[in-house]
Image 1 (cartoon, helix red, strand yellow):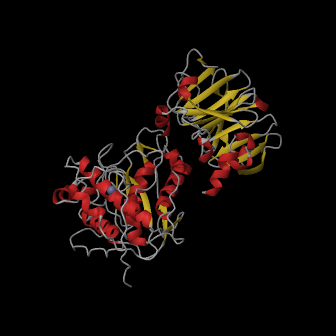
Image 2 (cartoon, protein in one colour):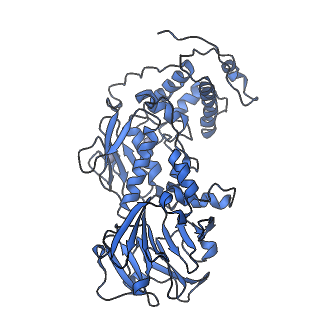
Image 3 (cartoon, rainbow, N blue to C red):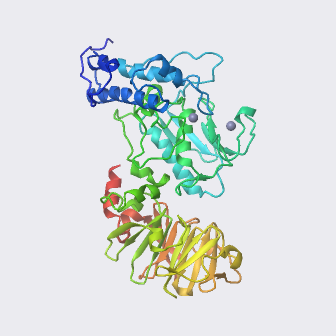
Length: 508
Ligand SMILES: [Zn+2]
Ligand SMILES: [Zn+2]
C-alpha cells in the first residue's frame, strides 16, 4: 500500500536553529493512515533535540544535524556490550521516524554479534539468584517492574517462570563465569552487567557490585536490569543520553519513563501494544527504585505531589505512638498519619531523629518506655522524643545477639517486649537492655499465618497486630495467635491515609 503524502508542519519550539536545520521545517513527510501527526511532529523535533544532546555530550558543534563527524562519534566504543550495530540501528530508527514507516532491519554482518529478535510475543523470565542482602520480594518486584517498562510500550508480554526453564534468565556472577575472558566481571566498579542479544536470553550481573533498590547507595539494580533486558530483547545501545539504552548507567529520574528512542527501538522489533496506544507508566510507580530521598531534599514540600508517596509501593517500617499517630518510614523520610487518617510529611528522618543513618531496616515505638527504637544493619538507636539515649547507637548484633538487618520490629503489648522478625525466625527482645531473651530465636510458625520478611508491623488500639509486606497486610489476633484477615492495605485500611492514592492507582 502506498503512503498518502501529505505535508505536515513540524512544530519548532526553538527559533534559534542553525541554518543546517531549516530544511526540516519545510520537509514534506509521507503520512501513513493512522499516524498521529502531533506525535510525529514532536518525535521528529526530538530527533533534532537529541542530536544536539549527543553532540553536546561529545563536545561537537551542536548543529543538530546528523553529520559525518557526529555519526563517527556515535560509533565510538562506550561500554561492555558490543556497539558495532548501535549506529546503524539508530540510523534505522531515525529514518523510520522521518520517513514515517518502519525500515527493514539491516542484515547483520556474519562476524558481528548474534543480534536479532524473538519470534514470539510471550516470553518467560527467571531470576536465577540475587545478592543475599537484597530481600527477595523487592528484587522480584523490581525485575517485574523492569519487564513492565518494555511490555507497556510493545506487543511483548512477560511472565515469571518460577523454577521452570525460561526464555530470559537473570543471573549474578563473581568474576569469570565461563562466557569468555572478556566477559569476566571485574569486581566493584567498571563493568556492572552484560547481556546477550536474542535468542540466547541471558543477562549477567556482577555480584561484586553493591546493588541497591532504594537507598541510593551503590548501583541501582532496577535501572541496570531494565537496561540489560533491553539487550536480551535485541536492543542496541542508544546515543540518546536520556535513553534507558544509553550505555551510560545513570540514576533514575523522578519521572522516569522510557525515552522516545527506547520506545521506537522496541516497537521497531515487536510492534505497538495490542490496544494501539502507547502506555507510559507514571514515574511515581517506579519512584521506589531510585534515590528518591536525595531528590526530595532539594524540593522540600513543593506541592502535595509526595504527600502520600508511601502509598504507591511499600515502606521500610511502620509504628504507632501512644497518641495513635502512625509513623511510616521510607528511605530517608517519614510520614505521620493522624488518628483521622490525614497524612503529613514527608519529613526528613534525620531532622526528627538526629544521628540516624540515611535509611533504616526496622522501627518500633515502645509503649513500655515511650521510646522509639530503630534498627539498621547490626546497630540500634533509641530516642526519647528527638534525643538519642546515652550509649547509642549500639552494636546490638554483638552486645545483645540481635539479628543483623531485621525485617520488622514490633512492640508486643501482651508480653511487654520488643519482637524482631528476621526471615523465618523471631526474637523476643528486652527493651531496656536490648538483649535477646533465652530460648530465642524461635520459628515464625508461632505466629500463625504471618508471612516472613514483612516490611513492618504494629499493634493498634483494637488489640490486633497488623503486618505489612509489599502492598499486602495481615491482621493478627494475639489471643488466638492466628491471622484473621488479609488484603491490600492502601485501599482497605483507611487509617493508613491512602484512600486518594488508592483511587489514583486503580486508574493505572
Ligand atoms: Zn556473562
Ligand atoms: Zn548495555
